[in-house]
Length: 469
Image 1: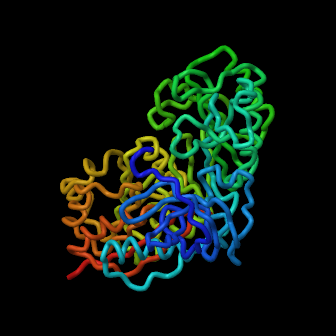
Image 2 (image 1 turned 180 degrees about the horizontal axis):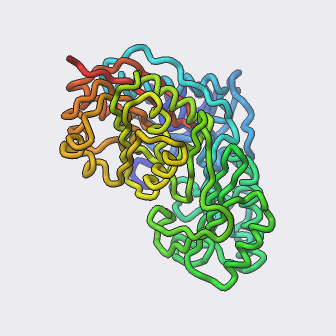
Image 3 (image 1 turned 60 degrees about the vertical axis):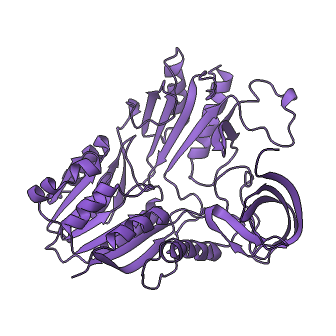
C-alpha cells in the first residue's frame, strides 16, 4: 500500500462542522481530525478512512446511520460523482454561514489581519441555473459507473460528454442533466453528443491525443442570446454538416463559432475562434450599460450576482465624482464602466488583448468618454512611469485571478498610495496574503463576502482599505 494510504472503518462518527474545500469535519476516537466530503453537520456516519496524515485523516462516507435534521436530498442525479455542487445536501443558509466563516478563517485566524466584523455572505438570487458559461468536454474514455460492466460496453457506449472527474485528467463524467446553466445548454450538449456518435465523429482521447471532438462552450445571456463554440483537434470533412445541424436544431443560438485546437490543453485563450454563423457576440445589460461578450471575453459567470458584487465594490469605493480610479484586472471593463458615472476618470488594465478591445467597444457603445483601457501583463503595464503619465489614482479597484496579485504589482500600489483600495477576490487565501503586504500602509475598513457559486465552497470577498496617514 502506498505511503499514507490506509483502509480503516470508523463507525458512528458525528459530523461536527463544514470545513474547507467543500468537506466536513469530524474526529476519530483517538481525537484526530477527519475530513470527509458530502457530509452535513449532525450526520452520524460510518467513515472509510483512505489517507492517514500526521495530524489528520481523510475518508469518505461508507454509510449514513442517522441523517442530520438539516440534511437535504440532493437534486442532481450526478451528485457524488460530479466534482461540482458538493453542498447540495446543505441548506442554503448553512452554506452562507460556512462561506462567511471561510473568509474569517483566511483573513483573521490564518492571516492574522485586523478586520471589522464580517457580515454574512450576500445570497445569490438563483441557486440553480445561475451560470452564464459552461464548458463540456468530450472523451472516448468516460467515467464508468459502479453498476456498469466495462467489458460489456461498446466503443460508442464508452464515449461521454460532460465534466472531468477529479484526479483523472482523461476521464469525463457523461452528463444527462446539469442544473448549473439554463436551457438550451443541456439540450445542446446532448444533441452534439448524439450527432457525433451517429455520424462517426470520434471523441477526443486526452491521453493518446486522438479523436476530433474536444470541447463545447455554451454562453447564455439574460436576454436569451446564446453562443456556442465547438472545439475540434483538426479540420475534418463533416465539420460544416455538424455545425449546420447544430444551428438548425437550435435556432436560439445567435452566435455559432468553431475552434481548431491541436494543442495538448483545452484552453482557447491562445486560439482564434472562427465565426461560422450569427453575430460575433452576445450582450448583457446592467443599469442601462450594455456589455459585449465575445468567445474569449471574461464576464462574471453568475450574471445577476455580478450586479450585487459590483454594487458592493462601488459602495466601498466611496466616489464623489472627482476621483481618478484605476481598475486593475478589468476584464471587459464591466466594473470600470459601472463606476465611471461617479468618477472623474477611470483607467482599466487587463492582460487579455481581446478583452480590452471589448472594453473599449463597450465604453464607446455606452457613450462613456472618461474610461481608458490598456492591455498587458499587470506588473509590466502598471509602472511608476505609467502612473506619472495617467495620473495618481485616488481609488484602486483590484479584481485579480485566484493566484492573487504579483508582488511587483503590490509594490507599485504601495508606491502609488491611493486613498482607498477596493480588493475583490475569488480566493480569500491569496487575498489575505496580499492584504498582509498592503497592511504596511492600509487598514481594512470593511469586508463583505458575496456568494457567486451556490452549492460549492467557493466565495467571492470584497475588502475596503483606507490609507493610513
